[in-house]
Length: 162
Image (cartoon, rainbow, N blue to C red):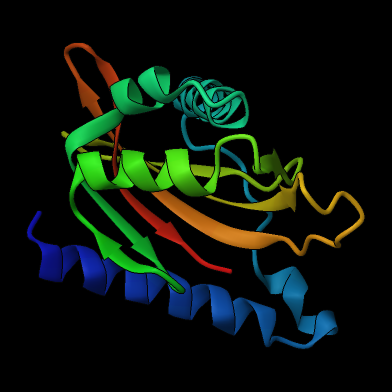
């Protein structure tokens, strides 16, 4: 999938999510509750999410690097686009390790299969500043495109929104 098609698909999903949040409460019942299309895939991606963020929270850079695809694309609404795995790992070491922890918003993950590629994970999480333990954390949305490789699941693309 080329980048233009990916960005267009993500734009569509985000537009849909914004539209869902602007629907009056009495009409939200028209939007079906999320039920995993493939429960086995859902559990595999939820497990990978836990594995990755356990490494993130414990500053296991080697494990994080192993999970990221070599051609990672990381879109951050505040920081922009990073396409260098090496630069991403440096930024994680400098800005995250020991300073920030992530907590998944329980029940927020949705996983959808991507034919002949892998899966997309959409959810909410919170980040906590370890240096300011009383600072509030607001849930933020994330989208991760997981690629199923022969060596296992790899994070290919991330959209991180705050």
